Image 1 (cartoon, rainbow, N blue to C red):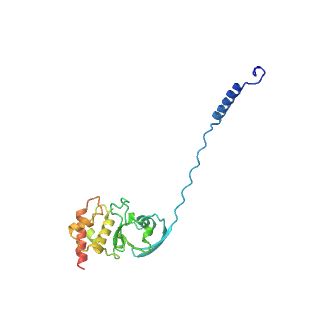
Image 2: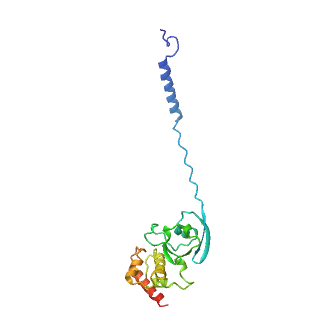
Image 3: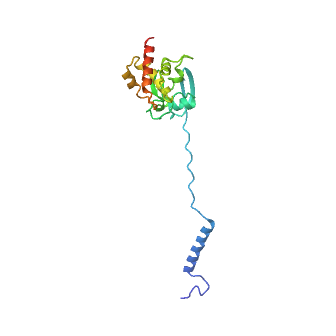
Length: 204
């Protein structure tokens, strides 16, 4: 049988090895890399829903993310910053507001739930320059230190005295205010303030 290399034609073995070498050199020379996957498109923003509620006596209308908490809506959309974001888990009470006079935790509730509702925060407790009796009692009895939890403490005490128990004992105050934490541990003064406010409002 004739030898292809002797006739000037490359053998099959030479052809394959030469082709592989050329392909490798081409890849090294161009720095070719595997194609990268295209980045995922960003998620579309959720649709907003209309919301109208009365906050501290003023009717407010806006559109909100249906997932927005009442706390975030008050603070970020309406600039009502009295309620504080402490734990954002309903454990500290710093976000306490009043719904139709009753205490609720604004961080645990969705804002759209309160369409046409009446919300009162610590900013809405005073009558002009005249402080609410609970606010005045907190000042007189030093019921605060750093002040971060104070708005929630005061609002919670107002709801307690006006809607739940107008004449609580000291033990009842401790129990009914236990959802409002004070990292500065001003609890004795807080209890004294609530007790004094209860006496004042009870004498009216």
